Image 1 (cartoon, one colour):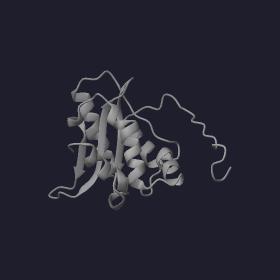
Image 2 (cartoon, helix red, strand yellow; image 1 turned 90 degrees about the vertical axis):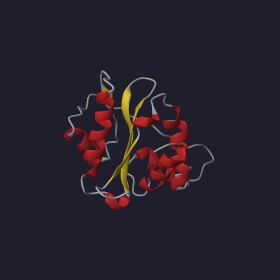
Image 3 (cartoon, one colour; image 1 turned 120 degrees about the horizontal axis):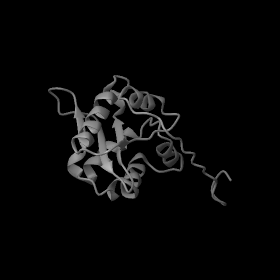
Image 4 (cartoon, helix red, strand yellow; image 1 turned 30 degrees about the vertical axis):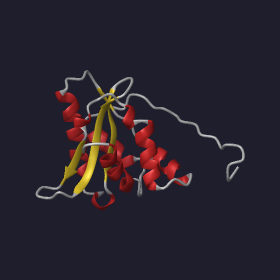
Length: 154
């Protein structure tokens, strides 16, 4: 991956069937998958100071077809697996474990003191992948959302 467009082009189909609560909320608000991917990139991923050379695209052996991707990064607080996605056609085959391992390897090679990652409680497959990789759940966050007055459904 070279730039914003490369990553957004991969993030867009990952939005299809996503279990990520933020992505689901963006789609439910009426954003297209592309708009949701752009928003996520522009509001978070594009602001990281970490090298984009850390970003990786996973491909099957002997193929140039992308299976998924990982964005190891440094946010304002920690080194993190900022985003990981498996394209819909390749979900359910365990590729997420290899993709996560590559992101973890990149950060470990940079000799960072710790790596953080987060997922939603409803994203059971991602939580299971983190557990298989040896990530330890050490805290929980609760994000409250309220309806905006005058918005549809309020």
